[in-house]
Amino acid sequence: MEQTDTTITDLDLTQYGLKKIASGKVRELYEIDSDTLLFVATDRISAYDVILANGIPGKGALLTQLSAHWFSLIQTHLPTLRTHLLPTPTALPPSLPRNLSTRSMLVQRLKIIPLESIVRGYITGSAWAEYKTHGTVHGVPVPSGLQESQKFDTPVWTPSTKAPAGEHDENISPTQAAALVGKELAGRIEDASLKVYQMAHDYAAARGIIIADTKFEFGLDEATNELVLVDEVLTPDSSRFWPADRYEIGRGQQSYDKQPLRDWLTSSGLKGKEGVRMPEEVVRDTEQRYREAYERLTGEKHR
Ligand SMILES: Nc1ncnc2c1ncn2[C@@H]1O[C@H](COP(=O)(O)OP(=O)(O)O)[C@@H](O)[C@H]1O
Ligand SMILES: [Mg+2]
Image: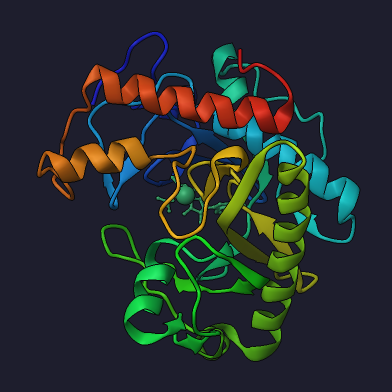
């Protein structure tokens, strides 16, 4: 791991007296107080569940600001859905380096529900692979005759397990999800996820981007039993964004995400290997795609 002026892959805020709660593939979580977390996105990137040795310049700030953009749209369009973002403006502790603010969020600390709440509007990726062999998506039969990248008649909720670090998430059916977290809660998660997806899909479509699928996480406010949308939302790390003007069914799409990185890892036989360093070209290509998605969705240049 390394650190340059513009790219932060390692981050240690314990030197500022903060207690570290967890370290994900991309984010570092620190405790502000018993109810509040500092949620900091680094510039790390992962593919096939392995973190690369170098990062993507500016990625952490871009993901944080794109999530903030969506949280604000959610507040406007779906005002009854709670999110973990604390009501602004909540200043970061003054002792912290100022340049962290663009990549950080203060969030409500919650018990995370152990489901990846995936919504798919189009058939691609692991769902397409399953459909080709079994005619199902996450174990659920779907109409026959679909082509790759085709839009579903209505978006489908296709949860997966949230595997512990180092293990792979497993696609499950809504029935299995209900068995894991309870029927009532699973129903609320499905409903909220489909609503956010639909709002975001329509918003993005008007800006030339198809949100093919996305993954949400939810927490539970144990005091009120309310569902709270947590984590990052609707970023190129958690979603497949396709340029609408190049969309064509019957083939895979050139998405605004890690596809160049995945393709390079596969073609160079490095898929799933630890400590791999991306060549400059893959870094630039990925950075460019993330920026383009950000600019189209927010209408603003990133930095
Ligand atoms: N409000 C919250 N309270 C507690 N944990 C959260 C909250 N929001 C997100 N998380 C957790 O923080 C982590 C985010 O870090 P990230 O690097 O994205 O992890 P991952 O490798 O699991 O994708 C995830 O494990 C997520 O479940
Ligand atoms: Mg994550």
